[in-house]
Image 1 (cartoon, rainbow, N blue to C red):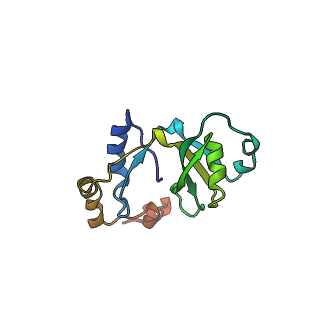
Image 2 (tube, rainbow, N blue to C red):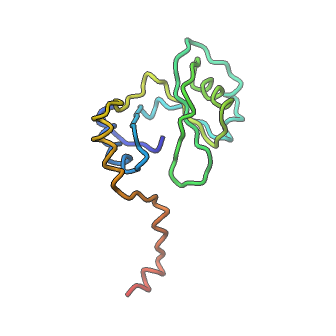
Image 3 (tube, rainbow, N blue to C red):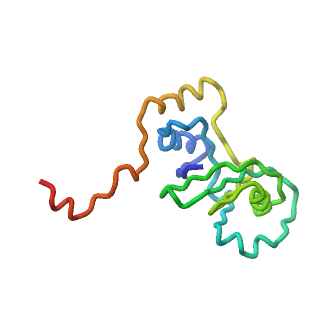
Amino acid sequence: MVGSVHATDPEHALLLARHVFVRRPSAYALFVAPAEAFFHVTQEGLKGPWAEEAEEGREEAYWVFAKRSHRRSMVYGDLVGRFLAKGPASAIKEALLHTQGVAFWAVPEGLVVGTEPKEEVIESWFAPAKEKTYRLQSYYGLITAKEVEDAP
């Protein structure tokens, strides 16, 4: 999980995400879900009352993502896994048995839409990024007002 785009529907979101996020050479698939479908909790929030509450309802599959550290300025969430749970909090509790992190997101699998794992999709959507140099924004440094004043 890398970021978000604002779109009218899942297909539009995939196209926007392609233009924004596929520049990363390691990209091999894209998945989108509505922002309101994500349940989010931070490391501090893990100690909150939600962790004690039992969720009711039928079990469904959730994808759980974890941000492992505060090292990067961008939000990177690694897919921890797919968990069957009665709610997103229960899915995150299950994920905590497998990993640690500073923030967690859970989203119902039924609301996730992604690219098809077909060779022609992978080739046309993701292969071009391998030929391009990608740099995080931290590569470029910070230009201060003093540097601008001193410029010739």
